[in-house]
Image 1 (cartoon, rainbow, N blue to C red):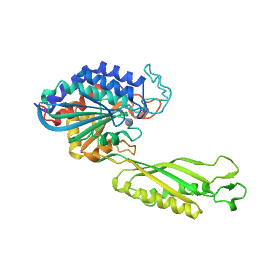
Image 2 (image 1 turned 135 degrees about the vertical axis):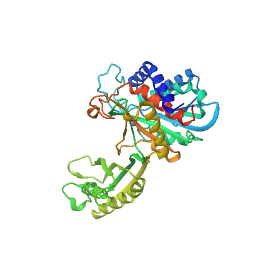
Image 3 (image 1 turned 180 degrees about the vertical axis):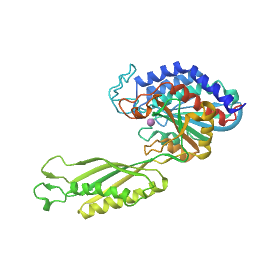
Image 4 (image 1 turned 45 degrees about the horizontal axis):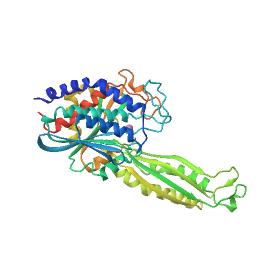
Amino acid sequence: MTQTAMLQPLVAAGKRLESDLVAFRRDLHRFPELSLEESETAAKVAAQLKAMGYEVRTGVGGHGVVAELAGPRPGKTIALRADMDALPIQEETGLPYASERPGVMHACGHDAHTTMLLGAARLLLERREQLAGTIRFLFQSAEETNQGARKMIEEGALDHVDEIYGLHNLPTLAVGKVATRYGSLMGSVDRIEITVEGKGGHGAIPDQSIDPVVASSAIIMGLQSAVSRETSPFDPVVVTIGSLQAGDSYNVIPQRARLTGTIRTFSPRVQATMKERIARIAGHIAEAHRCKATVDYVELTPVLVSNDDCVAHVERVVDAAIGAEHRIEAAPTLAGEDFSLYLQHVPGCFFWLGSGPLEGAERAYGLHHPKFRIEEECLPLGASLLAAIAIARLGGE
Ligand code: NI
């Protein structure tokens, strides 16, 4: 059987699950849970899997849920991953199934990803006889805080896995479309915390104090030169100081100031150089102002780099399942995704699935926006594509 002859019926089978998938996703959407608090969501996922007949491992890396489907013949183990957590955002969509939890919202569509992977688990179970190998389903906690993947890996989620695949919905891409990219797709995410120690005193007597606020201001400006003067214009880097806290009073020079920020890069080579730069620039500028800077540099997630062979596989599956005319090349982004950690251990591919309106998707509200919404037709398609990627890789004929 050709891939097209095998995969197109899988898309049709996904379509038949649409009303179930929509209902399940709306329920998750009404009751979102923050990172590492996804206990109800995980229980719903586990209940669905058990009802299908899966054996389920719960509490993996937080509230992660793992299930496995072994075919009748031996072969590779393919992991498929979805994330389950929501964001601390007050929903403003006005949808009838909008979040019922104040200040918490599925504004990144992880409710949709979870639903798609459950749909894939159902589609694959019905086709178990075709599998030469094993499929592992990973429902992950705490993607938004870059904690979940790391914990899942520590607790064995990738043991014996040969390849891993995952997707993220994209509201600025029309539903029915897929975007793929070879190599780097998303940026590394590092967090910096800088404490600038001075000497507190009277706001009117600066000569008897050492002012950490002026030093911090110089550091914030100086750090931009790490980008503009020290890295190639062809290597994207972002240095953002997101918070500056110092002092409580208008007429007091505080003892210390505290800055936090994030560094994003698009190449592991550049990421590896940023820690030294930030520490050197902040340290010496502080010194020039008679202060002392302590720099805490925390690497959260690496650059997301897909494996070429796995990208080619996804592209072949997408083309066979929905037609090459529905696939575009993804633009790179410096937003982060902790799927990158799995890719440091095993080859795989991460791709974008359109979840935006058919007309004017480029004007849709983006990920993490209080008015973010998805076109629900992406649910059956995502389920079918995840299933197709796995089944086509395991020699399913
Ligand atoms: Ni997300």
